[in-house]
Length: 280
Image (tube, rainbow, N blue to C red; front, side, top):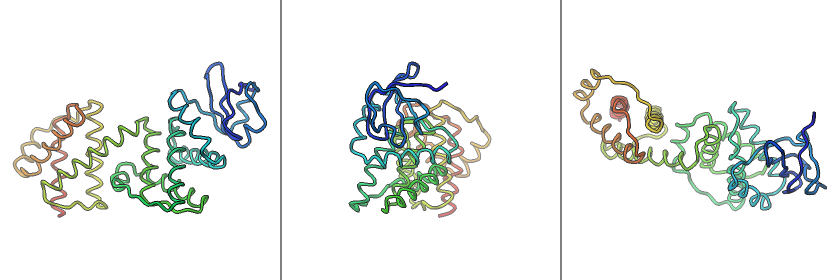
């Protein structure tokens, strides 16, 4: 049996908002779906290539306000990009990416057309933290560049990767950016205390970043990693500089996250830091 909805609002030729008894308001996207239709007309779910719910009132308002400023072909194209991302990530995306990525890409395309270049200071960290999202974002950028015949700066890959990560992890971009800022603050403290310049494309730097990220995640979720008393004594005596610095980093994390960080993290951080010293 076909599920029939009632059109609530025609946003453009390719996007309509319809009302459904169970889901309330549903956004339907499909080529020509809104052409020659009016409020109150019946419409079938089958007509749409993609349907999604925007349960959040604020996001729905954002999406409705955003669409009039975007070419209709671009909306269909972004919808295809989202299907590509979903397929590559092998996960369903949180609905908020429709608003966030549509908004982001519309501005990014605009900037590229005007040849406005800007950098992304976290590009190496993003690649280290979210390698899969980064690769998929590369594919998205390539598709946009080919379709629009424009060139994106490399920094865009990082920004799109963050949007993808936000959509597959259900974390807000605000939290993700907060964690990334904390990580770069910790890296700064490490460089200052050990008087070294870390090579951002180095495998040990990637490992350190991933470890810091996991430590923040564990603290956020209140997870412990267990105790290793003998190892602690050994590291404390063998590598006092790194051991003390590791404690300093833990204290910064605790202050910034306003949550306790498991003391066993010190051991793993000490090992990562010593590795960096040996390299330099």
